[in-house]
Image: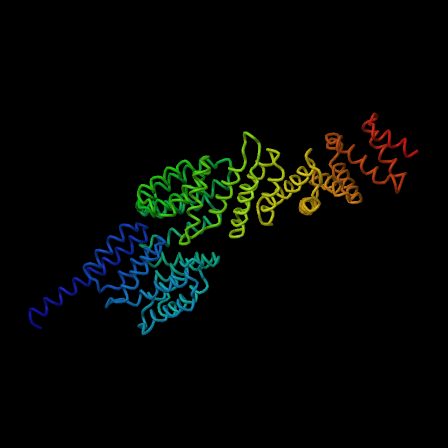
Length: 554
């Protein structure tokens, strides 16, 4: 071999090795969630070697993570023209197909990516599995099936085990997930994410103390790994929600760790948006409004900023700004609208409709708000958890009809944490809205809903005494005397079983119950009618209604 050929070979080997090192460094930077830094690195690599298809694929994947699908598609398509590693880009296009609900096209692209695959290659399978996991509608079982193909080739590969861990975790198989993460980190202790995910499993199991210890162990050996600080932030957020007495303390810790996460990743618009999402969870709306306005300075046209402005403006009392921001955001067909967008728009309209000074409700605006809240719940049933507080405020303002409209939406979710209380207040709201002085004629359809709401409370909590008396009162308005008497009798029984002290506290309600039960019996069973009127007189010897009614019965 002559000197020139040897020199050429050495140069080629050096360039190839350097490119491989650059790719690995870029992958570590992506894993550390330093996306802007990684984009610069990969774009530089592409400029120096445009034939590197894997670089295009990794860059496209970053844009996918940032929800910038147009740019992702451009780089995947460019990557297909590369001479080395081009097929990986079919996987990126396949994920775009999955995001667009086109599973057939996705499978066709995945087939192209694995066509003529070498026997020892498993990287393509891992990336396909991740495409299934990262899609807008994740399919973890499909991911596991793909990973099992790779397992036949190289079962001990650390990245394969990490992918298995993520897939099993998504499929709610905690034991298999734990084993896979342990195996991944045991095989390659530079896979920090595998070690971190062991703490994520503890966080998901609500073992918050152990999760924090696990994350602290990661920090002890890898203090510059940004994602672990995000996990700590989320852990303290969930912990605070599970321990109300420590909520403020833990939320402050959560916010501190999230700031640390940002400082170790980047302060790009995408990162700021992730921060804004966390501020929403932490209910730090003043900081959210500040962050939203900073993002607006960075990118005045990014529509998602309108979401943050809308949310924060509502919480900070800037109702007109909230309505305009959210209406503009929702009106853009290219935006991905979530349930909370409609919830906040609806809540903002409710506030605008409710004039606290005049105590007059603009029914047109209020009903538009209710319609938006219904859309929110139709998109995501868990939105009902946020309605109890809204209904209660309206109830306390004695806006019973309006409160009932909110509670009626809230009780559509039997799994809601406030389901029983919401039913009770729904029944009460309807009852009181039909007993106001300006009511000319009661609404029997609404009152039947109230009766059904009290029935649900009684079924789930048979000793909730007020549900019985309000159900009795509701049936009185419905002129269903038999059911009225039945629930007054049930009320008396429940309270009596609780002892003399409880009976004494509810003397007036007992008098009401005895008198109306007696009145129900007056035309059919005079003996029973007299018995109940006399029970009233035992509690209140001067009760005029009972005295006069007894005189009539004689």
